[in-house]
Image 1 (spheres, helix red, strand yellow):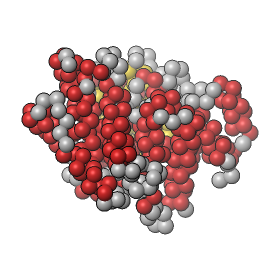
Image 2 (cartoon, one colour):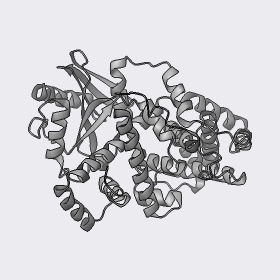
Image 3 (tube, each protein chain N blue to C red):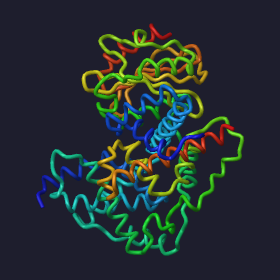
Length: 168
Length: 256
């Protein structure tokens, strides 16, 4: 491994720690697991620094590594996201729905996002927060572009409903 | 709301700039004639805006210092080797089939954490974090064709007259306008490009007390803030602070 590439990845990833953690949190749903995932991602990225293509986006490369670690680990234990076991969304009720609320704070929105199916939550984060195009998100997720679109539309519809209920 | 899932998909792709030209034109035509569809478009748009803001607030709770320390320690102990402890923790969680409350956990962390900023600056911090995610493309290749309508909507919600003329500053013209919200208060954001650098002018109608124009820097951004007439204002961008201040003065004069 070239020390130059390793050093470049090592210094570059510092700038992305917070966003990696946020992605990890939206996959894993627990803060300590998110930290562990980021740590594993950083170490693997440094190990494989020579596979990083200079001139491409380091953050996107790191996101792909993080996702792959999470999936492999989950798959190994048959708890792949979407099968429900680690799916935070299905276990959550939207407990604020019947409260009389005039303000939707960030915390409430986050609760509603937490209640989305994890595949929708992940897609929303990638496209609306991290700026992935549908095509880029589809590539990372290994899903058709139509699936990306459906997940986003369903998530928007749910989040709209949550908001309307609180307003009512 | 009487719109179909198929419409939601189309409206979503439309809002995301992912609809092809023909479909876009067809939808534009329907939107002109169909107020229900227009209302649905706005509702779906607001959902994504709220999501962006909510996720932006998460960044400030990220344990960056802890992660950095831990990474340094791991690298010092075994350069280039990934240690196994994280696997044990993930495994323990998986084995216990722990149902983890995404929002409960993270919001508890957020709201109990000490906050370094005065309350009235919280929304400004959220904007800065949100801005960090922008690229020149975020404000579009061209001026938004909906700019006039969007500004009219902003004017109503913010109860402040906003139009393209008032929002010109030096050689910059507004490119797009969006209605966001912060904790229930309407937040207008007007996007500019200074060369290739995104600059945003934000107005929050939150009843904050008048405050003179001040400038600061945060995370590489120059920020000008002031408040007037029950509205908080900020101009933010990664441009020299002198330039930003001059632009802010001009905007303050015309929108005050």
